[in-house]
Image (cartoon, rainbow, N blue to C red; front, side, top):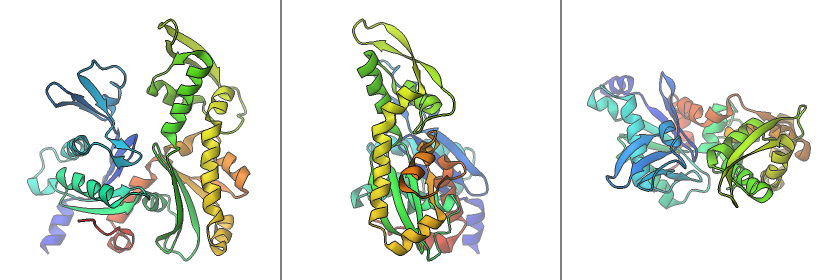
Length: 345
């Protein structure tokens, strides 16, 4: 009786700890946090100055004693203390003014496929330290498949490619389990670095991370586009040290991204090559589903489909699939028990 009462008051949370974005889903409310995974810290006073979007605006613009820290790298925790403060801040914002017991929710949190036991324990510890009463670990890509409404419980092959900021994860899922998978560190952030390298090599121009990301988002593509897109690329000229602006088009950026996009394709191909033939037949019929923010790169679905000969579909709102999947899991105890990873505690 008391368990049911407290579960009604104390709504569970689903947390997607991404290299670029942290998202939180709250039962009965939906996605309540969608912020950049950045924390600004004053090193003189050890004070947190800003978290999320406000901290991201400080990237590359801070004096020496202020550091805009990205505490998550390739989907895992690189700075335990800063991550704990970031999650505590987000949870505290949700429960401001609420009763104490309602501020200790049970939490479903996603982890990468290639996580180690040490990294798994770090995720559990940081969520518990941030105020959770109970932590359930699920694989990010399984949560993304659930969020994309893929029937993973069926005895049938489902291929999902989660194109995140730090990682590209490819998995074949059947009967609530992962049959075959591969992970690569070539993903959204690698594409940003490709644009930064292109600007330096071609124009002797130093770009900031945020400028590179904006160029990728606005004119980046994996295939030829129907119309020519252009954009000003602003940075610092290496030789003179002065500001400079260069006009670039989609074909130049596409060429800069080509190597990384081809690498993502090869990861998908190699996963298919080692998948049981019965499941490959199912995938050929159903197609491949893309999730994650990098799935929004223009034409990447067409590029992959053309090169593997299988239909490729982008999930609805691919950026939020994983956290929405965690929300579905929070409401389904049976499903949670089926897909939860054993605790490292």
